[in-house]
Image (cartoon, rainbow, N blue to C red; front, side):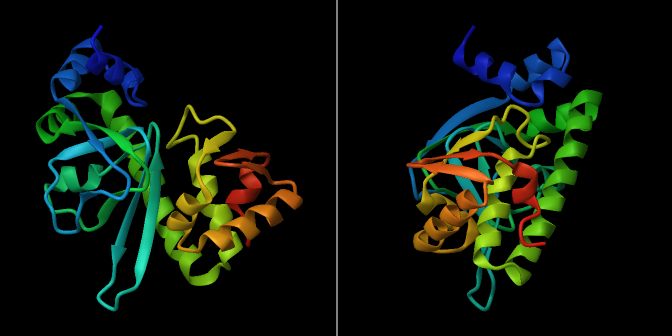
Length: 224
């Protein structure tokens, strides 16, 4: 089995596809590598692929006309994004940046639309995905407006343990304080203090480059 076939067989939505549908997905799949700090796409670009993170970490963000930066989501191993733009065949309304060296699986719009038109299982997955992403984006706007920095760190971290977006997530994530700060919109020093406080509260255990979650549900509600 080729590396490409291995990737298709292990993606989160593969379990809902028939063999014919999986074969169509394989033929529409390419892989690309982006080094840390690279733009995968800029706001206004046309990226005619549905995109999944095989390995790495990216952030989806935008800068307002007033110059205010906002991160909508971080996506790590196993997560997929951009289905809305592919469905509507529109230019991207956000920037996508690789926070660390990242390998992406990119499903062509042609293959995506064939699955959308022909696969019940694929559509079930898309409905769940769109629902979760919408909730995440709305919550992120709330975080930015009303939560203090520590709560933003806790909530952003909790998204990586959302079982709808990351069904295979365990209780650990490899992420640096710098990376978490970029996602939460705070400095590395604020992340460091926040993680110490959250550890003292019994919600997680922080080690160098790795965080073990003790209570993901409490993190997702932190600051409420």
